[in-house]
Length: 228
Image (cartoon, rainbow, N blue to C red):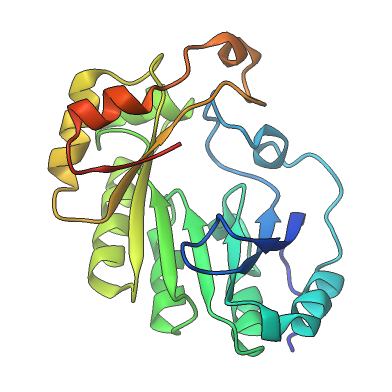
């Protein structure tokens, strides 16, 4: 197993039934994100607050329980910002467990490296908004190179063994037209729409924002799987 992996882990779930469909998985959360989505429910992780957890102890626990796990999810924050992400994925696959990566798609070169090495079995990429700069800035609270987001979508579609795209619908920030544009852009792809809930938001103003209604989404987007 690789030593001294440069990966700041800020959270760990020994077992989850929710983070990878049909998998019992451990989940490692990293510290830090390059987006500042005001509605984010992992604000402390996104801001990089807190002391990193001992990664060696986490990997030792995963090794001990490997026979009872179906895989490991690497989430965040944004894992592709971590220099040691490939090394962490190698350490997990060396235990005989597949890796799922949760990403915002802002670093396509890292995604490509992981896929080139066969280190990731499933990728879940958040597509925050229609793929234009103004929409992305509205949803993420920062300027985003949308061409990198587009590149990640294409790399994942063409190279990932298994993948999904996800959008969290935030009524205060998304319009009806945004959702229809996303459906058109991702037509034919595994796309899931998640319902925003005003819990633990990075920007406290969103703690009183309107929650998303699954019924509205199912009516607007027939055939699309709505979560939450």
